[in-house]
Length: 275
Ligand code: UP6
Image 1 (cartoon, rainbow, N blue to C red):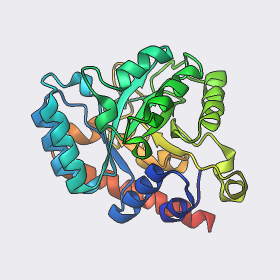
Image 2 (image 1 turned 120 degrees about the vertical axis):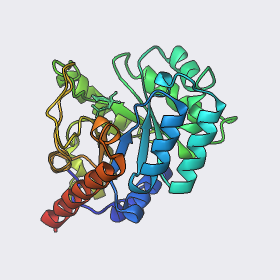
Image 3 (image 1 turned 90 degrees about the vertical axis):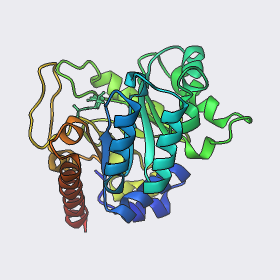
Image 4 (image 1 turned 135 degrees about the vertical axis):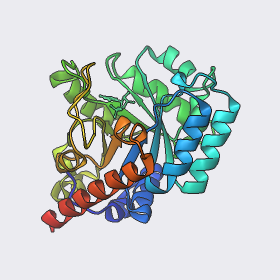
């Protein structure tokens, strides 16, 4: 787990998107990513607007939005600017390179146009990372510097097979494609070199996003397993991702504020322990 502050990491990072992400965290004092898993454009935009001041990133699954259209995209982009947060489409690409390029760029969802962050599984091998990176670096794509990839290195569901050699290979691919890969979806810090002792020499600082965060539940009936914001951050999460814990609460704004405070206090604690 990194013991450095977000601003220290921002100042040293070579990736413009990561810099911006850390700057947002520091400015808004939040490491919360809300997983806005609602199924209509109206609900999604309402959530983004009322939670916006308290989050660093909104995570979407736009393929579950029943009336997804250009209005969804325009609305999301407008709110991302209004509240200064990034958009992460949790599409979990997992296919051969030729297919994921078409799923990422163009198609019905036009993900490359509006999502700052995407993620993929490395089950298909390194070609998937290369294919997605190619889209962002192509000459006719103008958002390249504002795009980044998280590798799904672990999963929070019971019986997950994203362990062992798969997780190790995730780190290897991240290092191989470090211009485009900004970090991991994982339940803990995966790279020892994130400690400030070695990161200076290695020049490596991957961002850890952790899903499966909930303050009031241990899991659901379909195998989801939760930890608290504090435990996630202590294990190395830089950003905590919470869905139902926030949007399904009776008062989502009150809930997001609790996750913001718990997440921020845990981060300050981690930094203080390193000093
Ligand atoms: N997600 C996980 N676990 C993973 C990867 N992704 O839960 O290993 C995603 C889910 C959902 C969110 O697709 O969008 O994170 C978790 O939602 P929840 O907080 O409501 O359980």
